[in-house]
Image (cartoon, rainbow, N blue to C red):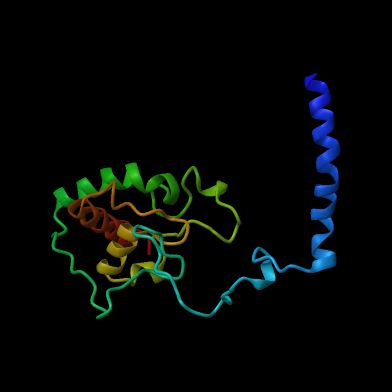
Length: 171
C-alpha cells in the first residue's frame, strides 16, 4: 500500500519538477540569487571595514595618529637586562635564535621563503626607536604574532633592553 502511494506521488510530482526546471527558459523569471545582480565593491573602493581588534598588521606597525612613539620607562639596569634575556629566550629565541640573528629552530619552516625571520641585530632594526620595537612586540607584524597577551608592558621593555645589548655585541 505505501509503495503504491510513493509511486503515485513520484509520478504526480515529475511534471511539476520538470516544469520548474524549464520555467526560467520559458517565462524568464528573474531570481535575486544571481551573482551578477548582487551589489559588489571593487578592491580599492569603499566602504572600508576596520580590522578586527587584535588583528596583526601586515602593512606596517600601527603608529598612533599623532605619530608619537612610547618612551622606554624602564632603565637598562642589569636586572632589567637579565629579565629581558630570560623572556627573550622563552618568547623570541624560538624564531629569532638565541643571538637574535633570525636562525631559531622554527625559522626554516616559515613559508614562503621571503617570509624570513628578521635578524634583530642588523643595522636597520638597531636604528629603530625603542617605541617602534615596543609597538611591534605589542601588535605583531606580518608573520610575527602579537605578544601582548604573553608579556606585560614592563616585560616588553625588559626584552627591548636585552635586545639592545645583543645589537651592541653584533655590529
